[in-house]
Image (tube, rainbow, N blue to C red; front, side, top):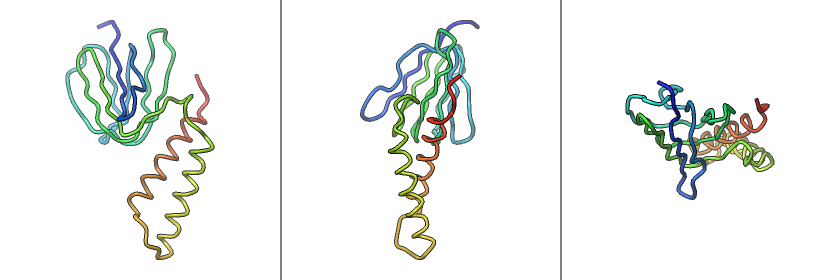
Amino acid sequence: MAGNIRLEVVTPEKVVVSEEAQIVVAPGTLGEFGVLIGHTPFMTTLKTGTLRYTDTKGTDRSVFVSGGFAEALPNKVSVLAESAERRRDIDVERATAALERAQKRLAAERAGGDIDFVRAKAALERALARLKLAKTPSQ
């Protein structure tokens, strides 16, 4: 079935993506999934990672997403993410600083410090995913 699918990526603060796409590939908590026009409807949770899509001109695009939900319909993919950033909007210095803070928190926890391990691990995963995407060469 030929045609494009509508992609909407939204956070509590803003609309990050609102455009037509040929295909959308997202990081579901049970594994990565792809959606083309005419897909069977479903809803899933997302893990921290990279959402990739091909725009109508055939250009591959990438968006960092952290948590949230995705709903696939036959003609639309809606992503409601806790946070999301297009590759070009990732601040590498800020992500590097966040990575260093998370590493220090985890080191303090290993040394018997009183920190929230789950939050520190999640912060580490977000920082690593942002930096990986930001440093991946564009196609």
